[in-house]
Length: 203
Image (tube, rainbow, N blue to C red):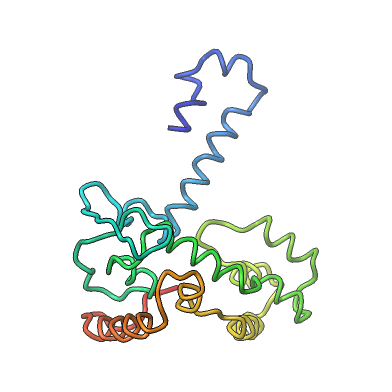
């Protein structure tokens, strides 16, 4: 839709008034944004659980909920948040907000790398400017020769110290009670163990 708005074949008057290369640059940025979203499993439209035809029901127990998934829970390994969505415990927007809060509570890879002295701020800024869809900062830093694999491992281990469980956020936001959380965690573990392809999904 965005490309149609700027494409010169559909908007010849805009092309004639636009600075040289601006339209092609806009189209390139739109495609880059699309590729970034498609590379992220949480936002991949083709794998999005809210695809047309899915049945939903109201969930009065969720503070910000409007609609929740009511289909079958997929028989494949899931993240805990995904499992709660497919169980109808959380609506999609509440899940995303909880994940954002979880990520915000943990320092980023780059900040920890600077804190540990493995990178300086100038190097980190340079890496961020070269980040590509689907490529982690640590992998890019190794590719550029700024970090060694063992340093990446050290940073990731250090980052885990700041891990804030999603379940705690859900309880703090009153999406679930502590008692319900214990039950959902047990059910989630049983689901994972019953899947043909056991184990957690790749991060």
